[in-house]
Image (tube, rainbow over the protein chains, first blue to last red):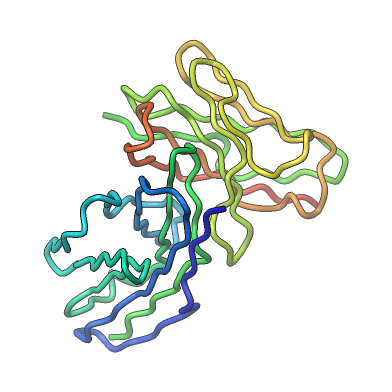
Length: 113
Length: 113
């Protein structure tokens, strides 16, 4: 069975601080895909990144970076120099040969001015 | 290029009633998935449609049914509504293939009284 755990339920930081959101996944499949989505108060899930199981390269996109480590089954997300607009609920998700996305419980991130 | 659209935005029903939610996928996408998101939780997979057939189903009772039309749009039907069916219902579309990320619509907020 597939499972995604986001142990941090809520995080609150002051603007310009760096913040890391943790994600740990479980699967027996050797081929799988990991995703991060952002859900602002409007409710729509916004796709941020996809990473496949064969590609352990870290990725940086502006203030966002992702650290994928198969050895620890983790796919962590870091926001550098956080801004108020980053406030949202962030979900980590896993997809295997099956078509469904398995989501974690989400981390509510609040950036205070 | 329009993204995924859903209707209605909000809906209020009473226990025992039936409801139909609608989804139009992003242009070029042929696969539609439905998710239920209870308050404070991550989305839970209901089912996925491809080529007008249900391809995969999550752990939801038969009260939840769906349909996909030749133009790839989809409907989610829920019969005999329960209070516990109150949630945000999210539709996601993607090209076929496990590799592809799913793009989500804004959701339909269903309240069952």
